[in-house]
Image 1 (cartoon, rainbow, N blue to C red):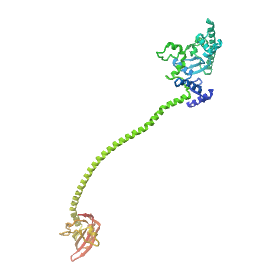
Image 2: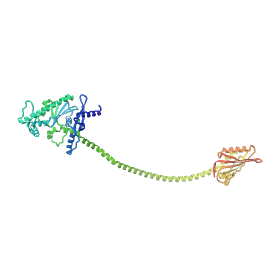
Image 3: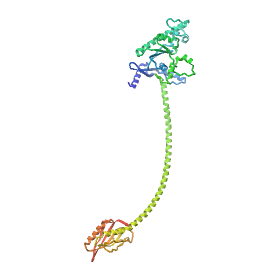
Length: 489
């Protein structure tokens, strides 16, 4: 199933199996593998919050800080896995401590743990009850004269007190053995495990003489003492002899220390809520510090950005100013050149106008002469200015009128004219004569139509100003022809 559903199921199982309200305990879990029935096997651990808090208060009172809270059987399991390597078959670890004996069944990746409330203190209490002595005296007697009595035909020690102590110890060990056998049967029957193929002894009480022989006689499997320092590098300054005398105490300690050095098979942590909150705050502290630094750097960055931008803008403005000055100098040069060019162009236009006027009148007179019909000839061409025509009720040239006289050698001959005065001329008055060979008016009208086709005159501006007048042998006529483009002299 999905991992999220697995977590929900584990949380539900924790609520069902922990004998306290779930919000009053600190609990953790770890999935350790699959059972032969293809079910997930989960290690579930829980302890009341107030117990953990009291332990943490004791740690912090010694100026220490709690980082990890492990469980003794799980720490011992990590130490065994690290020092024994790949375990073949099923290995049972019997950790005989002061108040409890922890059993561990290690098989491949699986682990099964059980705690038995029979250990060193049970032996000490039995000795104190048998000899009616205080607990501490009984503990001292156990350490000085205690061993596990051998069954069968073994001879008893000469010291009667030692013999009695050894029998008491054997009785307690026999009870412990019975619980161990029950645990083996439970593991084989309920957990579908295998029978242990060897046993590792650990813990302070396990060093009582003949403890290994006792379990070997009872279980008929190889018995070894667990060495938690087999694969652990030891500092040269530490005495190997002293360490050997107390190595049986360090199984859980080594397992807990390995959590800082390597990846362990079981990594649970029952730190109290106060420690978790502090750890979360400490984890957030670098981010908060970074955020605070960023908040302080934002105005500084903005100031640096503004200063840099202002510097770049000043450089750009200075460059633009230099370009403007260069362009202004160039503009002054261009304006000077333009002024000189305008003067030259004006002079050129004047010269062009003079050249044009030089050929204008001959061309105009040539055009008029070419459009003259037979039996007609021109007596005079009189240019008229716009000011002369503006006068009311006048047809004369006025004060600005210019007159051209034309000398005609013969009819249809080319004529020449020269103005006597300068001024804007927009109209020419034509006076002429003709013979009576055809209708007088038709001859004049034909001449008018020819002039209207000329590019020099406005076709709507050529009109007969005075009809033909008959004399004895000829007739006289007068035309007014408006120029298409005024002529400025």
